[in-house]
Amino acid sequence: MTGRRRSRREHTENVRKLLITLVVLAIVLIGADFALRFIATDQIGKVVQSELGLDTAPNVSISGFPFVLQAINGEYEAINATLPATTLGPVADVAVNLDLLGVRIPLSDALAGNANALTAASSRVRVVMPVASIAAAVGLPDLAISQQGSGLLASATLTVLGQRFPVSATLDATVVDSRLELRTGEITGAGVTVPAEVLQTVSALVNLSIPFTDLPFTITSGTVSVVSSGLVLDAATSALGFAR
Image (cartoon, rainbow, N blue to C red; front, side, top):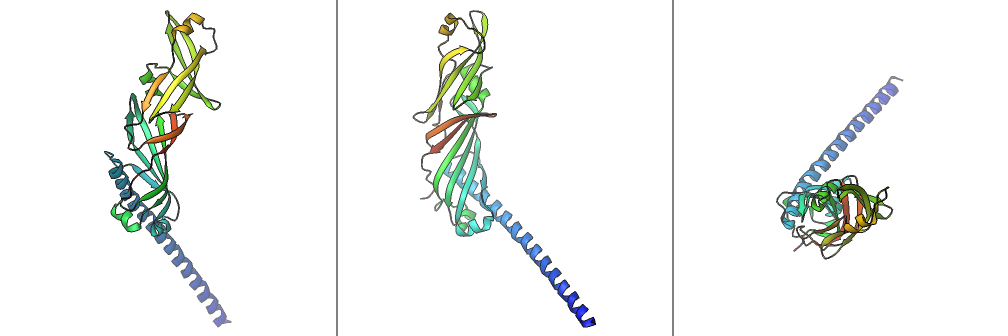
């Protein structure tokens, strides 16, 4: 009986030691995973900065876990880069977020910050333009832009003939020749009756062209929506030539 109890104690002790070893190993692997991810994202950020000609490195994040398996294979599901805020034409404080999808780069090159072998199957960009910046460019300090069904609605209060009238209009947003064109359709009174002669004096509520030529890539197409932070353009980009 004594031998059997001793055997049970030894077995319990062995199991406890195994569990401790596994926990320690898991902690080490997780720590190594995060450390390798940090180093790689820092270097890839420098690669993106260099290749896109940015003044400062973007904030880079890499999707997927465990990261170490992606790094060893040199294949990443997605790399996200938040570029420094920029000014596009008359619109300031524009946020630009770039997604590189299906990225391939050997681990040695990623750690060395070498872009010669970096390729991306496709890329998408999200451009967020604050409504306040658009209003400043248009010259209407109380301009509001909202989503209306599948379209956009622009609203403001205009002073015409010494009187103030709340008006609203549908807002068309199209991407043409590397720029975003914002144009209003028919203007109506916003819940009040606005004299026809007043509406006739207002040619357009918003008539704005926002160029993308200062971005480090070409936007080829896109869709526009509205979020609390502003007007959002989700777009496809031209091929990004990292690999040489």
